[in-house]
Length: 125
Image (cartoon, rainbow, N blue to C red; front, side, top):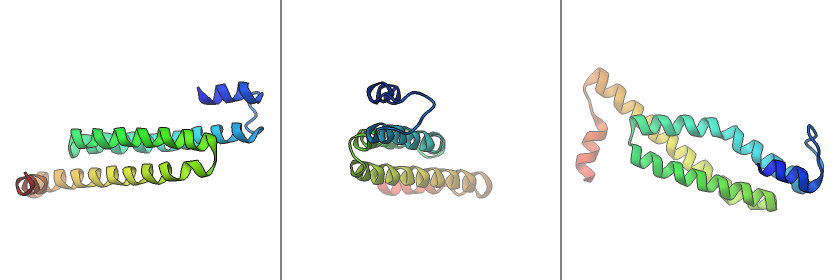
């Protein structure tokens, strides 16, 4: 919706993707968010299914907030995107790590009867 608003504001008609620098930043921010969305949904789903739903949902909400901040920071200036971009990348790596840990625990428990996450839970709870 922000790209539609920017197209109207800066008078850039479709299918053109270049024009005013402010429009180009909004357009690029939308593309960047769209590119990472499929990866985010995949690792969020896998980490929620195999690791822990609560932990995954907290990191998922943090990721959405940082992408929101990224979009609005990028719309204002190219430098405004950097801190939220690094934060969202860190959260995405954490979700990838949770997914990997959950899948590894599932495979170890299914094939070798070793439950690492339950053992760790006893130590920390």
